[in-house]
Image (tube, rainbow, N blue to C red; front, side, top):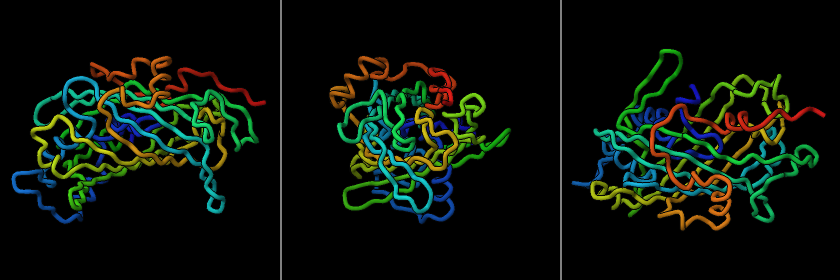
Length: 318
């Protein structure tokens, strides 16, 4: 699949961006999942239209203005089958989202996102990092700042599989209901053309023709809010996000074997006032526009790899 079609965001989850690409989850649901019963007069988990309406509300809301979603987690190095998985650094940030209704349960999701890599011991946002995988070499940290990361949420999912090949699925999420909670999750396994040519970027590029990234998200909400979705602009959620991906370009790992694993928790925010003080202060100083969501649809989307290429020069081999 083309990375621009999948819209998973470059470093962080890109919660708004990843939503339209639930083909894998939808296919599994359609192929083998047993039908579920909705509350009479409430949410019908088998209805693609209601799934789209609920998803838009769980995905930071459909009301006017900007809506923020926060995440915080840890990033680990995975090398081989026998070496112990080691933590490298933490990551924390947020996305700013705005919905534009297109009618018929379809919404433009206008999104931009930041994420900051933090020292394991101090918890402070890093500008430089001693890479233990390179014998402590000091490298310059490039934080996540992706704009735009736009998408469309609707009852049908269109997935571009190749040149002239498009498949379509109904949006039916894999719901689990337990007590007063509603839980759903989906997996997105992707790859896209590597924008960093190893001949030009020998230390930053994996050397592979494609970059493979997988993201796994979970959402937890109140079942009563799903049943009452028609009267709500947003459905509050918390959850989790995991990611598997290549070494980040700024780590200068080149084609060394291994990859990164992220795990984090996520939460919708009421406003920027709920952001942790260090995250808000760093954003106000360095990326102030990210405190507000985009106002207009812009193409194409960008990834952290493309941003890195635009903002940096290759680090020479010494």
